[in-house]
Image 1 (spheres, one colour):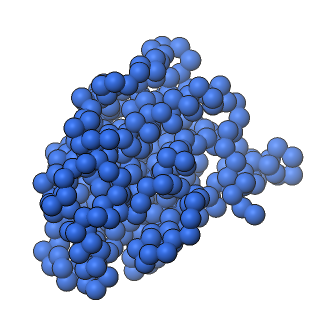
Image 2: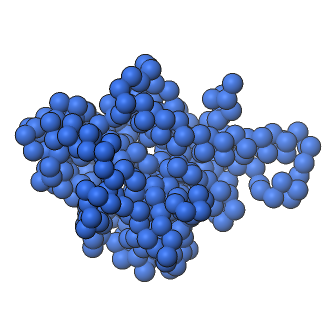
Image 3: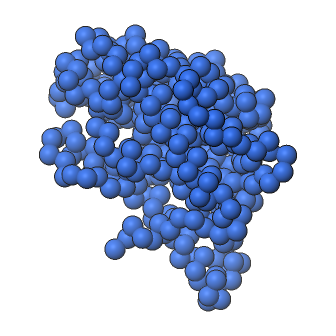
Length: 362
């Protein structure tokens, strides 16, 4: 992998096979999307969305996203609303190209040639930064409250379009710091601030204030949350794009790896419990023990796109690695995962669930 392995806009990257796809005129199926966060690993979701948009058979009603998933979701929704699938692909490309350029000019790239490697463990700047955030908070080392994500998002979206939208609905999750509650921004509440809040890692940047309340990354309470897709959207199929691995091959031993694994477990637990509850309700309705009216929800069909094998070997530091070569590698992992899902699971969409969250509970 090389930092020179760049993609060329939303078109397929050089050297990749064309997986083909439908023109969207026939066989289109509507889904809701639940997009996880994960820092730079969100480029995997970019690849998934790019492949689904290229295929052309999926129509999106609602998008629930957290952190990088919320930013990806906002680009997707805005592109679909303003120009359709190709515009959405272009929006996602522009976002990640900006992130790559920002990384190239940033301190984490200094003294470490852009090799496209997954981790930055050998980067002395990263090592110093990792030490610093153990001793100081962002209120001390970043008193001016500079947030690079705000600059990256500047000018990419006209939020008035998202606020008025009914064809594609966006839901952005953040964690209310003082109340310890999940906040889902939607409709008239959507803004660049809510996207920045959803991606606010408390060890790196100060809490984001919106209307007198302070917010951290939404992953602490829902990564992502699916309830708005159930209660506010008509489509019964929910497709989760999972970035954070559920399993790891080894026990973490370094302080950073231990903290990161703790976050992964907690970030995944909230959404798995939501999906598990849905499966229980589905089963009770199927068995005739309750009605959909009594449950207050209709039966939901669950689907998932993931690449556990490809994502679980990535180091902790790679979540901060926005090297363009690495981003393109993650994008290609996502495109391949979506390819497999379309080939193996497409027929189940609209008919039955293809993912069982219950198998992760012993």
